[in-house]
Length: 226
Length: 261
Image 1 (cartoon, one colour):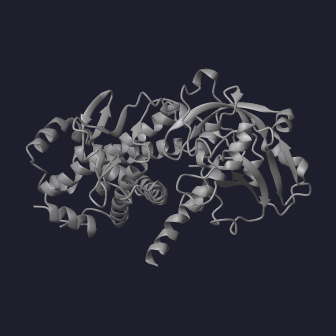
Image 2 (cartoon, chains in turn brown, purple):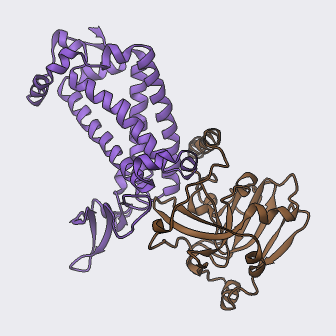
């Protein structure tokens, strides 16, 4: 009882930090883009390196030809997209830094579709506030698969992309094939790998652990800007 | 008896004590999630400035190793490998008794760290404003020309553990003044700025933070060094408090009143 009260007080710093950071740092500020010379010779693969899920394994064996990204929730026109369809869309390429909550940083080159452009044709309903990302991977020892969420403003950020290529190569399995989320200004655990579906929601309090993501359900901040 | 410390100074002092203890221990907890430091814009995993890890020792038993600038030291029991709650050896940077929480728990170390970072910043800004507006800075912190000229003498006296008495004890001596100025207006802002430079969100809006510290990994290393500079200050500070009249010093920082001889 005392402990959970104490925890709530400590947790209040997250919303203070988020609101102050939003006040002093514009949400559309672009994170620094680096050059080819800055690329990490060894980009650390974090979290799951090869999802054990049988459905995923079957898709991977066929080079993800049968994989479809499900897009639904609070949208007027739900759809599903193949990798070929995603690749046919206008793409962006960025060389950006990825900061892990553990403390290390790696720089990689990512190519993909801006999430904003992907969501536009769906007709996102006005009550939608968050974008949920559901994944094929399950962190070792966890009972449920990985998931994450960002808010609508973050989804519209120009550096928020769904990447299918890394360092000019097809996205390798260790880094989240066939498609992963990339954010400009949050920590690595927000950048869900091995995407299977995207859902627009009004609130995530009734989804799984209720905190908006796998690591969030395990005590980490939903707001990972610091 | 003289009234030595005003109420705002005393409050700021004790709030800061709590902040530094919690920030330091939770900071070590955060460090333990990836117990290595690097220089530059990104992590060069094979070129750490400092790394703590465990390797199999000669007899096959795991051994704690601390590597500093390419030199390795056996630090079993302290750094790299120490005891878990049940006494079994566990691979971790700093040992249990130094971190908050004691277990390897990055999520909760971060919660503690960011909450008390806010208290530290608010307290520090309030103190700095008080020092500037309330004349504390000019009256008590900036050394006089006479004090600066006598710095050699003061150092010599301190080395012999001879501390100011009588009238001279009414004010901070020149070493106190300089160290307080460095900590309050140098180390404090430095540790906050390097902390903010590790925030990807703040970096996006204020990229000059990356430039002045030479990148996020450099900022992380400077943040760590600044934390240990705070620890060094704290150890010397407490030693001086003990050596120059513990109860008198403690009372003056609680009630404000200091006894001069």
